[in-house]
Amino acid sequence: MKLTIECLKNVLKRPFTQKYPKERPEIPSRLRGKHVYDKDKCVYCGLCARYCPSNAISVNREKKEWSVDIGKCLFCEQCAEVCPTKCLVLGCEFEIAEVDKGKFVFRG
Ligand code: SF4
Ligand code: SF4
Image (cartoon, rainbow, N blue to C red; front, top):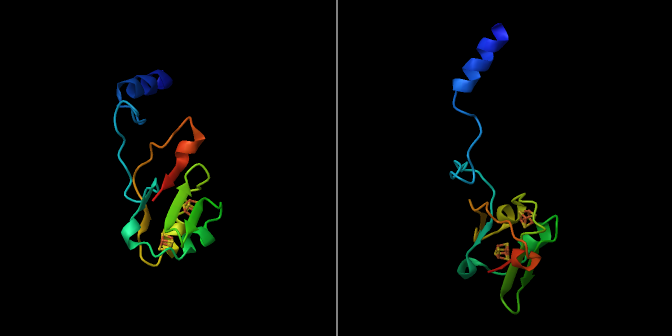
């Protein structure tokens, strides 16, 4: 009897799960999502690439090129922490699934 009452109570409660993707979930303020990179502030020092544990970042100082392969990224945020100009942060974009692996490379 006690079990039946408990079941009935739960049937009437709102579900704890979020209805994603039907409804946009609440984004935590400290979410580590897709990189946000400001090319104008980058000094191409290469520190982000040096500290990246998965070799996801490439920096070419001569050509002033910067890119990250999000398919390799662990979202640890070390690259953003070591960036001296803070031109690199991990933003709130988390819907980054792709079928084509080439689309994971984001060039600044
Ligand atoms: S650490 Fe920052 S300034 Fe240096 S190359 Fe990376 S993004 Fe650019
Ligand atoms: S978040 Fe971590 S794994 Fe991803 S690019 Fe930055 S340092 Fe590399």
